[in-house]
Amino acid sequence: MTDGLWVYLAASPLLWLAGTLVVWIAASSVAKFRPGNPFLNPIMLTIAAIAGILCATGIDYGTYFEGAQFIHFLLGPATVALGIPLYEKLSLVKSNLVPMLSALVVGCLAAVGSTVFLSELFGFAPAIVASLAPKSTTAAVAMAISSGLKGDPALTAAVVVFTGICGAVVVTPMMNAMRIKDFSARRTCVPWDWHRACLLRGSRRRIVFRNSYGTECNSNISCCTSVSVSQLDSEHLHVDAERRQAHKRDQGAGCRLSQWKSEPGKHRARTRLDAINGQQPRRRPYRRGPVD
Amino acid sequence: MLNGLAILFTFQLAGEIVAYLLGGWVPGPVVGMAMIAVALTLTRSTSFLNPAHEGTVSTSKTILANLGILFVPAGVGIIQHLDLIRDRGFALLAVVVLSTVATLTLTVWTFILVKRLSGGYGND
Image (cartoon, rainbow over all chains, first blue to last red; front, side, top):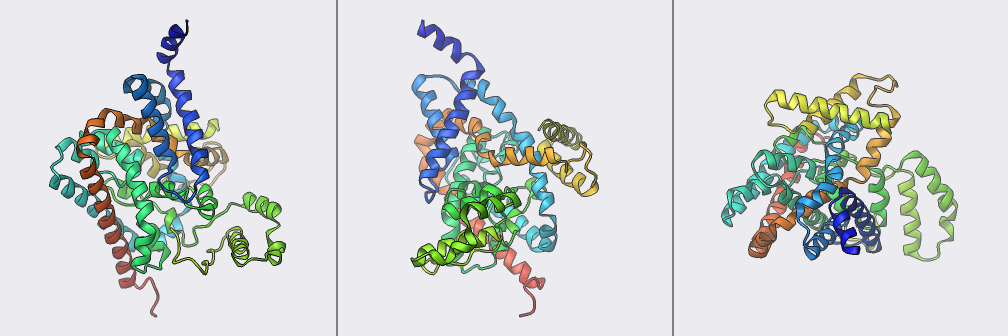
């Protein structure tokens, strides 16, 4: 009887559609436990968990995708939806247009060029090189490009996610080592996906990125047009209005500042206040440099 | 919600049509993204057909806030490439890390150099 039920469910799209959603929610809450760890990325956790389940049960990818395709399909509208933040940040784009466009062109060439060069160097097959080439774009766009180049979108998606994690790990130490202080410059070179990966890098960042949904940036041929720029937002701390109020109400942030006894605690309260006021948070005295 | 979805799907459809007419070298959704940004700059009314309508904005925010899950179905496709990872995993890792570092360095310095040359930092 249970065997029959299993066969019946495994054949319907509902099982894997529901499964993906549930695993995603679980992975997101697991990732929240360790906000400082970019390797605990919910995308990676979900992929690993589902891939593990599929391998263990011997279900092939085609069967899984029949259910998951409904989620996959939303990549299209999601890409279109990126046009809205692009429009909202248009004035910032305009004021930094020339440096941004040149950085984008160079970034495109560098990303695609270095990837193709390195993967040729390591002797990968042409189809794999084509799948790796668009890895610095956001996954939605990269997958479209990869299939256009006769690559494998599945491999591209995985590599894009991993590039994002890698970028999130290296960007802050690198930028600090190079002593880059201009945040619009720092943000321009960080593609959108990396922001997703950055998302779990600390409570302050969580406040930021839950509210700032930007668009991707940087480095791809056709993506040059789509590029964008929430990153250029120099203060990059926009907590929207109602959240700001709710936050103030919850925290009583303004009046409680004097109650903090310890220095780090006081600083946390100040940082929160800065975030609420939409200002650049002041640097912690014991931090090496700003965080991206 | 429904208005928002209708607008997003319609722009994607329009983008796909334009992309097809252009010969398919640019993805349809990317064209749709450009079109929705242009449409927003052109229209300012609040009719439900306007992309700036509240429904569209809230729908977009919901989708974009959960963008990560959309990559999962494609990412799971990696199980078709397990042998590649087993055989060439380290080479793959090297490609990703090295090209990421190279891209970052070049991009940030181009931005700063061009901004400095065009006087973006003022005269000090």
